[in-house]
Image (cartoon, rainbow, N blue to C red; front, side, top):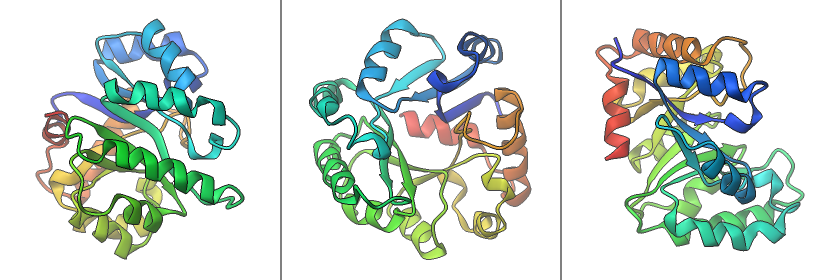
Amino acid sequence: MMEHLYDTHFHLDLQKDRVAAIREIEQQQIYTIAVTNLPDLYRKESVELRNKYIRFALGFHPELIHLYKKQIPMMWDFLPRARYLGEIGLDFVDTTYKEEQIAFFSELIERCRYDENKILTIHSRRAVRHVLQIIGKNFKFKPILHWFTGSKGEIFDAIDSGYYISVNNSMMTSKRFLSLLPSIPKDQLLLETDSPFNRKRESHSLMLSKTAQLIAEYQNDINLWDNFKALLK
């Protein structure tokens, strides 16, 4: 049984009813890392929606970099003071702007590399190998691979480098991921929802509770709350 609920990857600004989403976070005491897709959204939301249970992550979604190049200097301005980063990473579903994504993500990692206070929740759709190569093994920040869909070799390389793997309810319907789950060290697993980008229309707290219960079926005696506390230390 978890002591508390938490979510390491939640899109507050994209909820259909943002007021209701905040109310549930407060009522259920869900410690939430609210990711943003652009630096300007981070600037607005981190001021307007300040909350005891919500921490905003400075983000620049990889698919938006080529569209909002003018916001790149804003990203670098906010970066030194931002503890949480996301949504960041690489997305190679469409490789048209692959090189721009790689250039931006590489610079971001270099600016964060030795900052042990930073926590990065990383998007890696069809790009896990590139993410791992750019980050390498010499870093001080805490990386979380969010919604992992890569190969067995890639997940084990990430685990060996000390990454956390955050798990949502949709991942728990993937036979490939479930085959890997028992092999992931218990202390490297975290919860996420990536709401609203998931299939089930359940409440925030119910999605998290169900995911935690399902993980426990594959990982005996796991303490997901302890993992979250270790992440924040």
